[in-house]
Image (cartoon, rainbow, N blue to C red; front, side, top):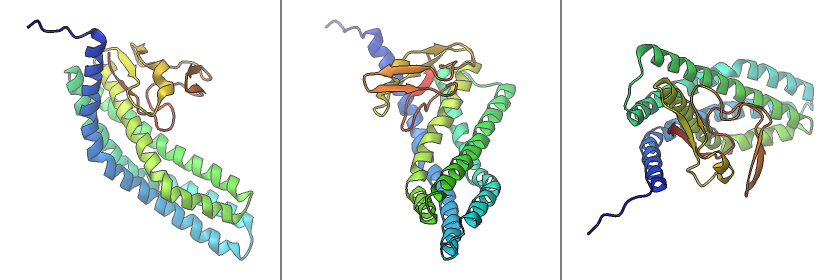
Length: 251
């Protein structure tokens, strides 16, 4: 019996599935650890803000709560880093081993040091972004009422850890792959492999040859049958939107 030939598109799809499956093993190992870190962050945040807000409710002193929110978040960024950075670094290290196997090369000592520096910069930025987001939306809620602040922060306690876990597991995986693939001399390709980001299909197959962006201009827009989205920052790797589970890999 003559063996059927497999078309190149089927071969490529098989390779991408293998890459996704290999990385998923690492993701599964670290999901609960990442979720636990962000749950502790959200609990500390909600406990402090809700306690102060409820104390102030009887006084009806919005200015006092505004001052507390500003002071709290001035000191909260190191707390986030203390809880998030250790698991983030370990996850990045585990993902690095996987990506090195994908390209069949290991990073040099200098390349590894550069990667660790890039991951630490990402982690620091994530902590800063978390604080900025929280402060912005709580102060906005305070313009309505003290009760709105409590409602917002308690909703974060329930929902934010899961969203933060997904966002940063994808971000750390993608940054690690981005750096390892390009450091070892390969092209980097964007693959829209997940069910949650049909709009990213337009990015599917785009490649870069060096440490540059898939989107070089802020405000660039791409469209899909699902709609359109404007990109307000340079995009080097996924996620490009909430729930995005695209990957970047050698291609």
